[in-house]
Length: 562
Image 1 (cartoon, rainbow, N blue to C red):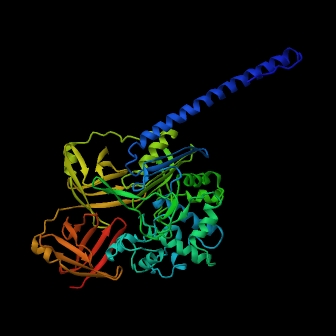
Image 2 (image 1 turned 60 degrees about the vertical axis):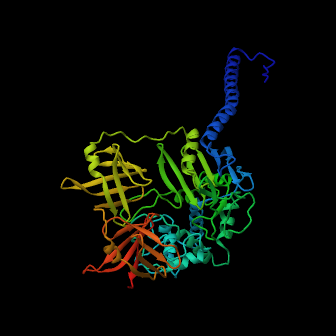
Image 3 (image 1 turned 60 degrees about the horizontal axis):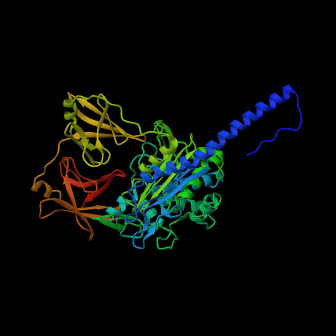
């Protein structure tokens, strides 16, 4: 670069000022040139670190695509592993995946845009547009649905107890509306608790079409209002799973030493079912800064966490989670459907956005995404505060605890100096007297007469009580007394409970294979999948029915027929 001095003498003062300006210009240009030389090296270094994060995926495995944007500019995209193992097709940044629950923010956005147009109010009852739903007493609103505080039951367990679980029938959104209409109870009064459920988001697509009233489909509306304006050219809803989609990755799960296909076979959208790329998801994330769709008020409203009726603010907003990770504000959502795993996160205070889409059920997209984000945010995973707890007190906490809302159990064991939860929950790490960290939540114990009687598990969205119970070892005669037929109008099915030749209690629905029940506490049982069956007795002690429960369906009742 050349610099030219002026051809004439400007005088002492003017010459000094010019020299100073030129020196500043030279320093600035030197720094800029140095930074320009540094950026490729820095980018290459970060790319190497991203390669390390995704090193578990190769030409013999399914894998992931990742994209990173910084202050609106895409700074990295990459693909790892295979999109199609049978045809030897590699994953690239342009590979199309299914989003899982990351789709919920788009359905929530469509409802909010519709409200912005004056066609609905978010405080309208769902029944205003979906009169098929039962009257539950307290109004169940659209706003409650998009924040998972509606109390609506998850459709998948309902379908399973109806004898046609996920993967055995090609469901549509109208099937799910019919299923929801059969429910005569909610998990809780709307607005009083948080319970994640897909049902409301699925049937909201039908609500949108009815509110539009012009024959326009949900897919067409989102294309017109969201995907088109943002240039999300690779995004569409999976309305028909048989549709040929260029560059789509198949989904896989583990099977022995290899893999088996786990691509969803269903035609339901809204809660999931969005086909898209990491590049398109980064474009959507940028809208929360630029507000091209909806405007500033709209993007702020979608990121506003919901509030429970008692006044508690939770972390879930409108199809988005607003939390703190590594001490930074994070707006994100994960997704899982079939063998697809997705995570889309944004750190608004730093202008960093990351999208991860995988076609492996073994991939932890959230972990991969956050590890990638740390390369740009500089954040570090926070370590749990160390606290020296009395081993004798920890050992006394071991035992069996029943979750009061759905009769599932939490079993705590004491082994090798560690208090741990059986299953995937992991170790309870002491953080204070009587308080522990477990899987991102906080556990506290309540004691009476010197012994633990219950524990409370607190998450950013809710607080759940577990009561200590004595483990049950029912005799063959006691198990046999529970055998019989049980029926529910809410699933239009019968459960046949029987004592198997091996001495274990089972239930069977229609022609499906029997499900083995493992005794937990008196009249309580769990399945291998983690659900519960609790037998109900009248005042005389006679078994009159049962309650099926799990995290997203708390108390599904079956009456005993014989």
